[in-house]
Each structure stands twice: as structure tokens, then as C-alpha cells.
Length: 120
Image (cartoon, rainbow, N blue to C red):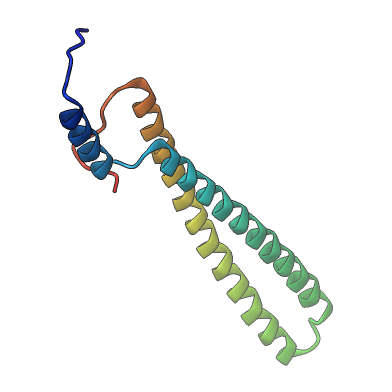
């Protein structure tokens, strides 16, 4: 690799152009922190929903005599199941995005430019 003296103005212009096109590693790290916070939040929601489903299952077995209670419990179970599925889909998306961010960081560290698309 050859080094060449480059005027400061040109160097600054090129760096400014690169900075405007790409997100810095610090910004990627912040995105990862945000994604981790989101994952932790979704994990807590999943635990809450699983607890709610377990409580509803126990309540359903105890209240098998009452038809009205059974319908209400069934609606709550269906709602909890729907929320658990939505949370699982959201968590899957967050984890996929985290993998993409880490791949981009690895590419930056290895000095391999990514695709022509900007991250911004």
C-alpha cells in the first residue's frame, strides 16, 4: 500500500462525505444497545404473558363448571396467545436486525466495504 500526501481540505472533504453516507461504529453500538434493551423488554413481556397463560390454564381447570367464566377465560387465553405470537415475531425481527448490525460491524473492522447502499 502506498501513502500519498493529501491536502487537508481534500482529506476533510472526503471524510465529511464518508461520514454523511455511513453510520459510525459508535452509532452501530448505540443501535445494538437499543436492540438489546428491546430484546430484554420483549423477554420480560414474554415471561409476563407465559405467567398469564399459566394462570389462565389453572383458572380454566378450576372453573370448568361455569360456562360464562369459561368463555371469558377462553377469550383471555386467545388474547394472551395472540400477544405471545406477536411478541415472538417482534423478537425474531429484532434478533435478525442485531445479526445484520454485527455483520456490518465485522465488515467495517475487516476493512471490507459493504454494498453500495448507505446505512443512514
